Length: 162
Image (cartoon, rainbow, N blue to C red; front, side):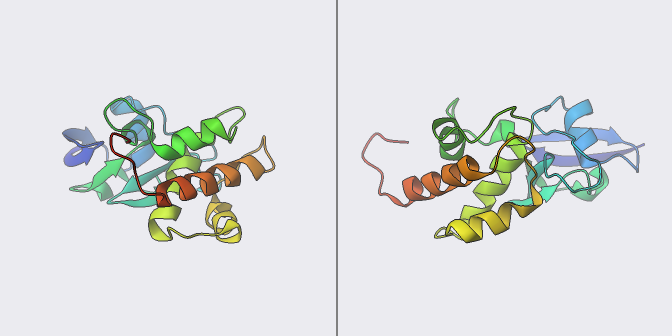
């Protein structure tokens, strides 16, 4: 066991981890952040997607010790001040989920997509989300949610609006 220190959802944490502990295991089992899901253990499904230093990664492919000193954001840390992130709202409004298992990873990937390409079109969104598998939908409403969020984020905010 070795101690690592990292920032998770804005809070500094120090934890003891075995050298072979995956980041997803640290998040779910030690830090009780169960919004990050384990779907395949082979980096195929994307259900475990989180941000490490602002970029989406599949946390089942990263050792926890590799996150030493990093800033990790999970679905639980995406919203601010008890409010949903605009992408979470878009998934809700556009019915971009069914069973919800893939949703946290899908949302984390989708936000990263728009951070990397704020003007992403439908093709680019579909291509970006290729590494996230949803077994329930045909992806239509997921893409619709991402494009809706993109359009909402591009509009100037009114005073008092989040």
